[in-house]
Amino acid sequence: MTIDFYWRLPTHGCHGSIRHGAYDRGDWSPLGAHNVAPGLDRYGEDDGFRYIDHLAEIAKAAESSGFIGGLIPSFPNTDDPWVISPLLARETSSFRFMIAFQPGFLNPVHAARMAASLQRATGGRTVFNIITGGGGPAQLWWGDGFSHDDRYGRTTEFLDVFKGVWRGGGFSYDGRFYQVADGGLSPLLAAEEIPEIWFSGSSDAALQSASKHADYYLSWLEPFDQLTDKFARVKERTAALGREQKCAVRVDLVARATEEEAWRDIRAGFENLTEERRAQGRGGPTDSVGAARQQALKPSEARRYDELIIAPNLWGGFNLLRGGPALGIVGSYEQCAAKLDELIARGTDAFILAGTPHLEEAYRIGEEVLPLLGRQAEALLHAAE
Image (cartoon, rainbow, N blue to C red; front, side, top):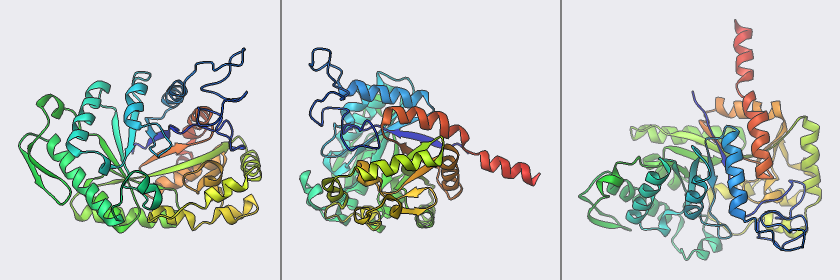
């Protein structure tokens, strides 16, 4: 069985170290002496090295280290993945670009034409990460006031139309959110492969939509038993529709030569937290089931880093250090590989990995952790023989 590994590309700037909270890579923070992309030249002026150049370095590092592609996330404070992807495609040869976007913000026919054009231009390297939004003020930032379940209903219809027009001319659709009459891509565009669809969402409405359209169901890392149960429900629902769906996990790692070294970095990062950063870690109002599961770990209430160790080599405070999901993997190279192996044994078919700083960690994880995968299974097999 082949396991696909993607790396996360930070379209919102990056920290130079997991130990410190400053976004000193990119221009999301004021230009300082230690900044990168841009940095300061010998005259104290902007050195002209743009953040897209830094992202290209990360993409090339990940490609050369064994990652099949990269997730390009989308948040209000990020560059847009649809724009970033073709720019980075020119800098790589086979690296896939997983574009994160909320379907409700695009017309599905126009999105199909854009995606098919991108497939033609990049040799079929487009992948989608379909997100449907977390609700609350963050959703209204986009001008989207639809309720949780309506957003998933809209996503389902979007994908109905997206695939329908791609598959040929004469496609008509009369839904609640979209109507199409005799639509379809041109033969040249329709000949391209429809991008692989990765789908995020933990609610029943999300699982229902994913079962119909997704190739991969994507979840943040959760306690392993909880995640195993979720994957089983996804695969059961998909099988009921006569389809198969793979499952994937998005997770951050702090992997070092020794476990002590890994926890030392986590401890330093935790002890350098500001109260402002803790407050941000509490998150805002949301109707996202997945975000609520992460908030239930209550990382912002902890006063010691080890209060957030929820299981061996699993730490629940990553969102305090860099935003995003709370739960991640911490340990030696061998321990991190063993945790990924355990997730594979529990039904994970692919991963989106990340580490801070993204450039250096792409090399580290790719060269030190990924080659160790499967070693325990091999050892058990040899022992049985």
